[in-house]
Length: 271
Image 1 (cartoon, one colour):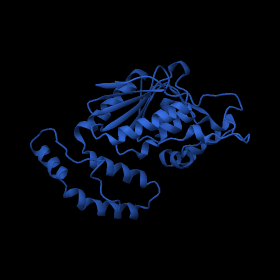
Image 2 (spheres, helix red, strand yellow):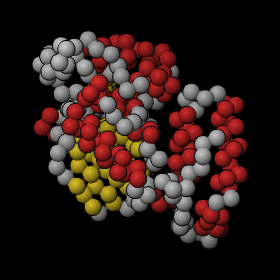
Image 3 (tube, one colour):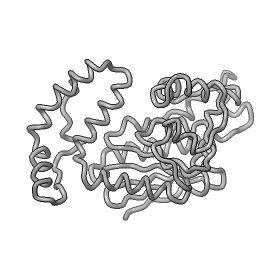
């Protein structure tokens, strides 16, 4: 296992799975410009590393992310005197990576803590975690594509309830709404997320996963016919790659597959 520590995040890699830990436990992992910059750099490096097959994001201590660090009212003022929040929100979205990203929400996820997790492919949540899209209760606006993603994940009425009220819900309600895939005791959240990620790392073809992930996220704005055309364009290509033969052979021989395709080198032109 390799691990890098220090600063706003901590990164470890083991058996093809990277764990990115938000690392400000004394501040309940409150979001800062430095944290965003560190996540951007880490995501870019992990996306380029074919040895990393999946990424799990979690929080140090008892919280996932308690929202943005709240400074004094003028802390984000530009030279012209206008507030500019975007310079500290800018983020490489988890959905842009060519491998699955799982949010292991081990504790409270407020504001950017949950809007960031919403951009991950899956969310596992602690049953007693407090979760809130609290933006309107701070006089600001939900961001990181919340208005597009949340209605597609849980439906328009439920998204309206959470975004327009900013109310706090428990992890158990997240699972009931479909906002989280699994709801578990806090101590079991990270192990469950890592187990899911290791299963992908060990058994799923990286190029197939990268293409399927892109199709899934693009389907949010594509019609079913458009998605069908993309699938039909990609299937002949991938069925004639070495990993397709290897997947069948490994299944017949009841052994672990030995994938050779590279998401960084071998993805086709997008139809």
